[in-house]
Length: 81
Image 1 (tube, helix red, strand yellow):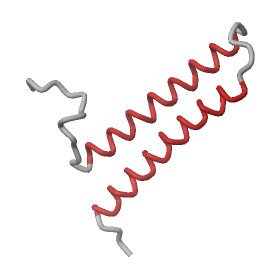
Image 2 (tube, one colour; image 1 turned 45 degrees about the vertical axis):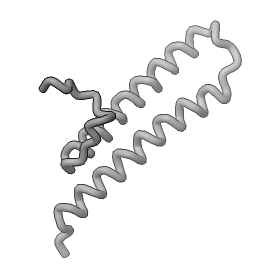
Image 3 (cartoon, rainbow, N blue to C red; image 1 turned 180 degrees about the vertical axis):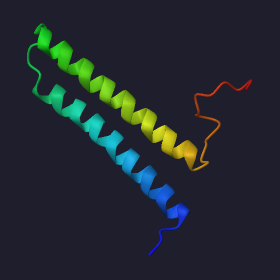
Image 4 (cartoon, rainbow, N blue to C red; image 1 turned 180 degrees about the horizontal axis):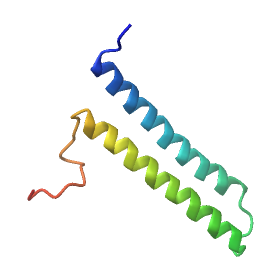
């Protein structure tokens, strides 16, 4: 059975959104257990988590844009383009 393109697009958006949500939850869990913000390993781990969030957010936006979905009032695009 062939999956229609629209269905593949929706699946891609859902998967990207779920990955982004998990990245955010991982950061939240990290802060739940942090006790010593002076520990250099805390900064290293946070930097890693923040980068994963950024990458996941970009992938989510890419999937949404690929589906042709946009919300001009909240998009970060330049209004002069």
